[in-house]
Length: 151
Picture (cartoon, rainbow, N blue to C red):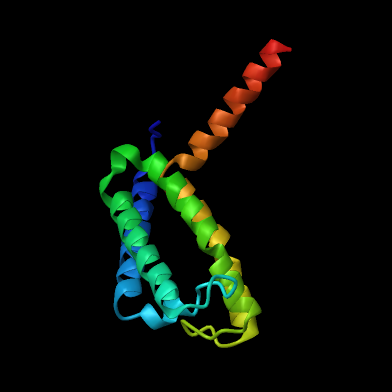
């Protein structure tokens, strides 16, 4: 499960890994309060639990960021896992929007709404830069051919 990618894709993968690592460090340190604002309000409203969510997601972000940078051999798998992670944290962005919570300079409904449209960009970036998008599309084509050959 390895895909050939261009130099630009590799640079993009490493850049995204750096961004993820930096964001993860922010979870644990200087942006901890900002990230608390993104914990979905439908989760238990317990300070210790909410802090655990922020800290644990920060550790996951650091691990995924480092994996994006250093585990090139497994880049397709890492890209898929990172894309899934982006899907899993999306409810936090929705919660920030629907509950009108200001954080990260997102202090208007318009800014919070616009932020929601960046999550698909991150998902595609993770999949494209690692070759996972091409892998998944080819896998789907191969699967469809197998089904067509049976019928």
